[in-house]
Length: 127
Image 1 (tube, rainbow, N blue to C red):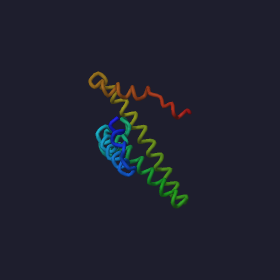
Image 2 (image 1 turned 180 degrees about the vertical axis):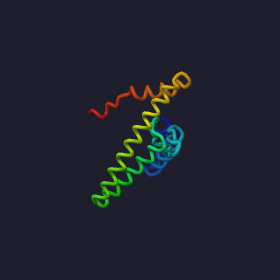
Image 3 (image 1 turned 90 degrees about the vertical axis):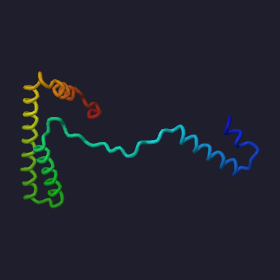
Image 4 (image 1 turned 135 degrees about the vertical axis):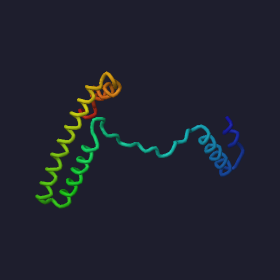
């Protein structure tokens, strides 16, 4: 109703200016503003430790080098880094699960968080 009063009996340019002013004022008042660029960080899995993480990054670096050069020696270096990363990740998961099982009574929150994460399914992969 209020906007209708702004637009009646006025030339088109003046009515348009009044409408845009009122519209921007109302959008500033009523529409919530974003809080800025909240950066979402990727979290590493609970069971992966620093050693395994460095091995995985090392493997990725060797793979990038192999893709750039496509040489046999770079592929061999990548395979070696891949095997080390796989071994380190499996060892980290094994150690985490053993330690978690030992300390279940003392620190049950970590146990239930890990168990809950293992019970979730990712349906989008099967579409």
